Length: 223
Image (tube, rainbow, N blue to C red; front, side, top):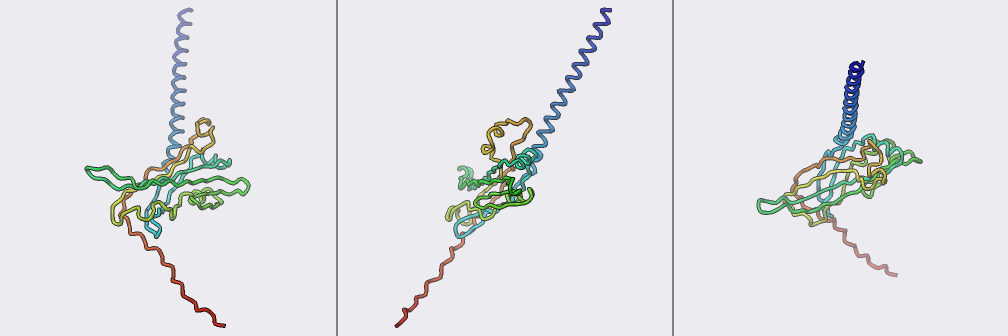
């Protein structure tokens, strides 16, 4: 009788250990899938193209960024939470074997998107321009479109010299409400960022400023 009871206990312990192992494996798999889903959403966001051109005032950046929000960020928008982004540009002059690269400019542009619950429209702030959109897809397109961003002043680059540039977009997690920014919501993914988009270019000549037409003297009227 005692031997039978001991045998049953051993079988029960083995079954418990097996169930515990399966449960732990399930938890780890779920966590991995959750993290992977967030990473996949982040990987879909990317800088598609970017370029620097000359104007009479200096140099401006034009760029297109594809932005894909994960479910956490989409849900936050639908509830009226503001999402802030940083568009970061770095321009440098390549060094050589005896000297380091020279940093030329590191401008940062602040972007914001939120859903206006009363208007039932998305509001996009891109630099000094504010626009609205009916759908999230349209709003993200506006958010990722950059035109005429003044990044370097006139004289900041030497015409014909080679420069390196890189650009990325990332979610500004410091601007999230505090309970969210410190990870107060289990399983939420409060992060989004593109990889650095890198390119090299020869500095174009700055365009001449338009000359205002000379004033034509007008003869006084004679009485």
